[in-house]
Amino acid sequence: MTAQSDALAAKLAILKTIGKKDIQYPAMPMDTCLQEARYLYKWCGADQAALTAAGLDWSLVDDLPVRADAASEAQSEWHNVRFGREEAQKQWALLSPAGYALRDELLHYMRYAYRALPELQTRVDAVAEGSSDSDMIQDLNDLAVIGREHLSPLTAVGFDAAKLGQAASKSRELSSLRAEASVDKRADRERKLLRDQAYTHLKQAVDAVRQCGQFVFWKDEERLVGYASDYNRTKNARQKTEKVEAEPVA
Image (tube, rainbow, N blue to C red; front, side, top):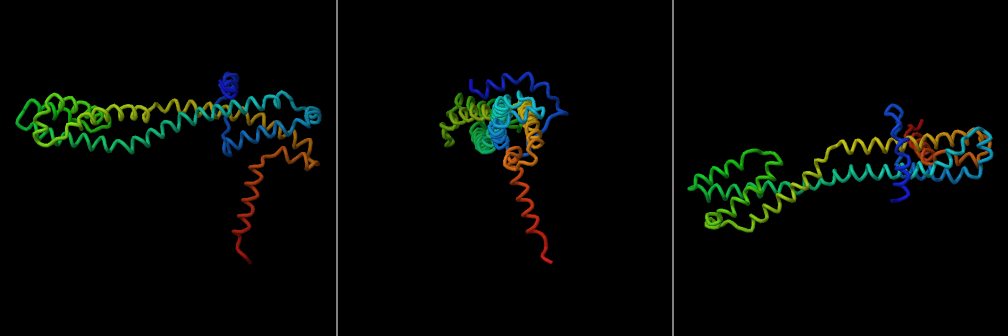
């Protein structure tokens, strides 16, 4: 296990107590949030005496790295679940048309090759029923079985027998991919909730330390700067610049 996974395991019971009504959401990229929390931990170390004299519980500072590691692990776990499914969905969109095309090609050849064989024609027609993704996946395998059992009529009309193996293989491939793409979104929601709980737990400590630092060093610009978000400071400065540039010239 990594330090991050250990931290998340250690914090899990606490995180689960954070209700949905109390959850806060990242207002900046998660990696930036984690970086700022770790920077704050290093920055405030020199100010322990002043901060504790103002009433700060120093255990919050000591806990910052653990909370940051827990939030980092929760973010990674949510990312893996979310983007693993999304990647499978992209692959399905890319590969499934070929599956449908191969299924239609097999049906085309079999309906003609078996036109004088009523029993086989009935089997093929039964396979062709249904139009869902799961139907297509099963159809490929069923048609491959029929074709192998009754190959001669197919080869007699110029059918490439290798496509039966391709159909069976494509059926297995698409079945696995479809399962990954259709994973219950509950896992995604659960991981997202845990990430939000971990972020909230981290932000609670960050906010407490920053508020105390801003109170103590309100007249000391050199120390005060470390108790504010550099991301927000840069964002606000950029917005002010854009606003000035957008104002019409009198």
